[in-house]
Structures are given as C-alpha cells and as structure tokens.
Length: 266
Image 1: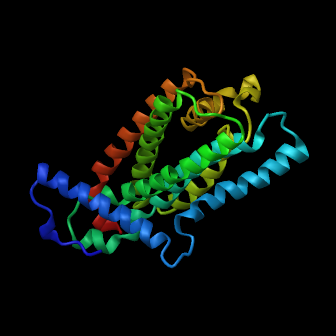
Image 2: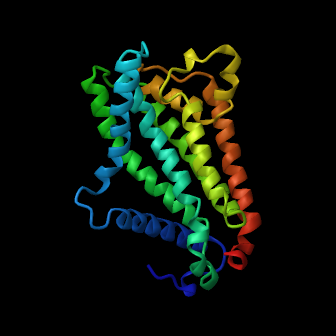
Image 3: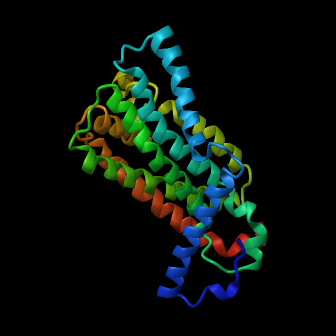
C-alpha cells in the first residue's frame, strides 16, 4: 500500500479521520499478507492454542494429573486470550524498525503501525471466540447472562493492555534493538507466571504476589470466571484495569516523546 504526503491534512478532525482510515487499511493489509497464499487462512490462528491445548491436556491432565475438572477446556479458555496478547506484543515490537523507509519518506500518524498489528490479532481473537464458545457448550458449560457484560469488559481491558505494551515496546525497540529478543524471553516467562496452565488458587501463599503483580493474571482468571463458571470476576480485576490504563498511558507517552527521532535512528 502506497502512502502519499498529501493524504494527511492539518491536525484536527481531518487528521483524526485520516488516521482511522489508515489504521483500518493497514489492519486489513496485515491480515491479507499474513495468510496470502494460504488455503485455510485465519483458521491457522486456531492451530497454536488448539495444538498446545491438546499437548498440555495430555501431559499435565492425563500423565501428571492436575485435579482440575474439564482441564482441556480450562486450558483453552486461558490459551486463546494468551495467544492474542503474546502475538500482538511480539509482532508489534519491530513495526517502527521494519518500516524505516516509510518513516523517513512520509509524514503520517505513526502509532497506526503497531496498533494495526494489535488490531489484526484482535480480529483473529474475535473470530476464534465462537470456536471457543462451541468447545464450552459442547463440554456442558452453557451460556450465562454474565457473558454479556463480562466478555466485553475483559475484551476492552486486554485490548487496552495490549495496545499500551505494544506502543511502549515498539517505541523503545527503535533505540534498543535487543529489546526485541528480551521481549520474547519475557513473554515466555510471563506465560508461566500467568495462571494459564494451572489454577491461581493453588499458588503457595508466599508466591501469590508474583502472579498478581502481573496485570494479565486477573484477566486470565476473569475469562475463566465468566466463560467457565458463569460468575463475575474477582476484585483483582479492578487492579488489572488500573494497570492496563497505566500501560496505555505509558505506551502513548513513550511514543509521543520518541516519535520525532524515529526517522533519524532507523
């Protein structure tokens, strides 16, 4: 997709409108390029959580034993949101670095580069939700009224957290290229300190703070509370909401402070 400087007018409503149009165009382009030439297309986004769910369900549920009822569903409800967050952050980390030529040639709302990657992964998650709901219903977890307010709330919180972290990581990576690899390592660590493959209630009391200092942990537990158990998430979700807002503010502040130097560095 070619961008022209004339496309973007003065700041104001026209600039905001152009930014939203560009964000939509880049998100659509991101999804098309990701599955270009693929027979199954977006269905491949289901492969990773489903494959990992099968492996972990056998290794932990059958071989080792967890004592958790419906462990396969328990895993999937945690894995689907996790892969949304992981892919959004990891794939957006090099969006400014990878578009250096574009940053030098054209003036445009640069935040759309990482945000389009986040939104592309968000759309994949939205398309995967009916599949996850099918697994839940097939396993005997019928839809509850709490799904109506609970799912949008968790969705917005995780989207805000993903956007904030993506903006921060993408902005800092321009000046510190090793961050791309550090993020990959940190995401692997985050997977294990987030209650995805285990129940948070089984964490020893002395180590509970490690999990709940992680803003993704209450969100992961919230998805299970709402979808599996049909109950409203715990009060910890409020703390996660505050941390998500902080991440969004930090990401935007970092981006605004550094964006004028992007073209000189990449």
